[in-house]
Amino acid sequence: MTNSFNHHTSTKFFNRARYILALFVFLFNFSKSETVDLEKKCIWILRDTLTSPEKIETAFDHVVSAGYNIVFLQIRGRGYAFYESSLVPKNPRIVDGFDPLQYSIDIAKKNNIEIHIWFNTYILWSARSAPENLKHIYHSKGEWTEANKYGKMDYKINLKSPKIPNWEGVYLSPIHPDVNPYLNSLIQELIDNYTFQGIHFDYIRYQDEIYGYNKKGTDIFEELFSIDPYNIAKGIISTRFGWSKEFVDSTKNTWTKFKQDAITSFLETVSNSVFESGKNIKLSAAVKPNLLIAKTRFFQDWELWLNNDILDFVVPMNYYSKLKDFNDDIQIMKYFINSEYREKIVMGLATYNQSASDVADKILISRMQGFKGISIFSYDAHQNNLDWFNPILHAMDYNKKE
Image 1 (cartoon, rainbow, N blue to C red):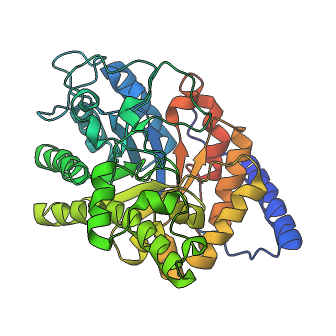
Image 2: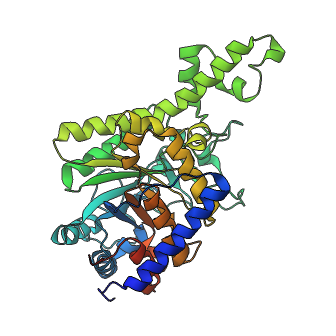
């Protein structure tokens, strides 16, 4: 990979993005801000790359040459560890005696790159067969898993049977009282045993709006508010059955907030654990890009997380291939997020569903809209053809000469 910066190519990218943004301004009354330099240049590296020293070295060669300064390293995936743990079984593809996390940390330290451990939070499993390691909590903690509004629990799902298109997998339930303490114990073990610069939470949400009905969790809600959440889901708490509209609306809002608060409480606990450790560890989360949908459908209140300084930054997964869809969510962010917190937004962009030039356009549009961080999902999507990333690197001001 060359280290020279092609000024003509860079100018072409900027002109193309400015043209596109001008078109948006004209058609949709979007506002244009000055182009800003990127402070955070992030990339996600998936767990499949962490299975051998050779794969890790190749990945970090690209990270260094491309000028990224933050790596989100997937060290917890589908309930398995890609590090040494006394609490979680190691992924069976990792050979005995090899610690992918420590190996990556050592390389990153030599190259002044921040490692933010990428932690799949509530999703537990998604393969068509059960985990082969019987110590995996899928086998021992079925009662911790999610349930939908029809009462079906995730651990009872036949993994081999066809699923609906948007089914993601078996989830742990944020409202089960034992789940968040368990997850925090995993985080605490990592804080105690490794030196890294950040914790990056993924799947820090419910799978969809029909979930969040774990029996132990709904019992707690009923004990607190004398309302069975299943009656809310079934439409029994309704004006049709004599309840006032104010009571119906209040009850629904209380149930929504109960589910949102379970996730927020977990993040607050982790934040306290980090503070008590005395280590300088940043907290972030990959979030749904439309903050309104994130809050009401997935119960992921990332606006609150920013406003209350629970997280240091968020990474909206703005993975749309169409520029209009991409920019629509940017405008929602700019409308609802106070300007003082916008610097805590790192724009996430996908590489698996569009061309590198399309990604480059979106990087430049993000910068023109005032966002000082971007994150690329993912290295692994084009690891066999790293030249594919060249337009993206130009758009990031890769190795720009003044």
